Length: 186
Image (cartoon, rainbow, N blue to C red; front, side):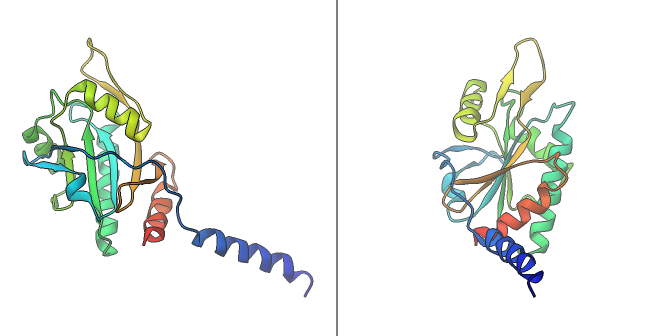
């Protein structure tokens, strides 16, 4: 019996640790931008529903297609689980990424736009400041380049607009962690 006590304590700590609520991070400030349909979209439409955000651009020659493909996979998995969640991708190249360009880009990854909004409708300076101030991530477009340097994390935001966690999509366990955290939100 004495040998079982440490094992039982470890199991108990694991169970208790997994059931704790997620800490609340910063609340994302109110915003309204333009989605791939040319419609206003922002915190007003997201209020009351958790959402997953990322930063991409359509002219990306490196990481964005993989990042967007991963987001499409998350959309599919969460839909299969019956989880009510919105997906928001902020374009980091708003001068190039018009609503029509974003709509064409998104069609390469999903045929379900009902809960995925790719946003534009701001200046380069505005998205750089928004990413830095709201998500503590970087966006930088050099004048002499068509590419934009940006963070590649996914962000889980709760129904009240608080960032609950961020996930490095190159981490093999990110998807499992994000799905578990989604369950902990409810």
